[in-house]
Length: 230
Ligand SMILES: [Zn+2]
Image (tube, rainbow, N blue to C red):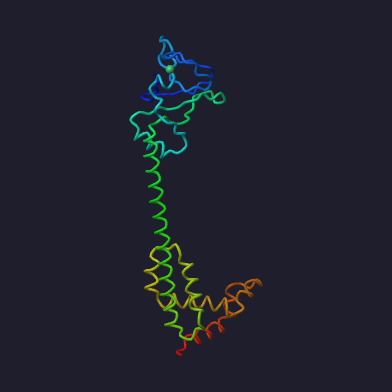
């Protein structure tokens, strides 16, 4: 049998071939092994039956993990090669392995992707829970400091802050330690964009510092109004 290193090679023949052992005509594109292809030795073509490989199944190349596992689980396997006229070399088409090895490899790969999928789902759930906790805590903090804020605004502000902090590590922890300053800055930004003509000024080409100076009075008044105890 032809071997590259310790690999058994099966060739997909490109011409009419006959098995030198059982003398069967194999036709075109037969799967054969070639023995004695070392210098001086007579070349001998054998069909898969005569090569004792007929009980193996073909696993096409392409899935690296599946191939590696099938190989591991198959006590006997062979590499399937075909001559590429274009590239002028033999190219791997896949493996011949025991059908049980393919089954085992497939279930292992499936289990792996299941585990990955479950991990992803768990991460998404915990992120969602983390977001919920953050929004709840931020909302409560806003209400503490700005009891007269119109209902619902605190939730908008908290959700926006959550987006802003998304992807940052320890978001839940930081929500817990949210200081008054962080809350005030979030409420300020909200007032600037919803209660003043700040955005219009910016769109009109007014410099940021000038726009802020123009609206400062209105912003401060609104902030104090919302901070008033009910
Ligand atoms: Zn034969």
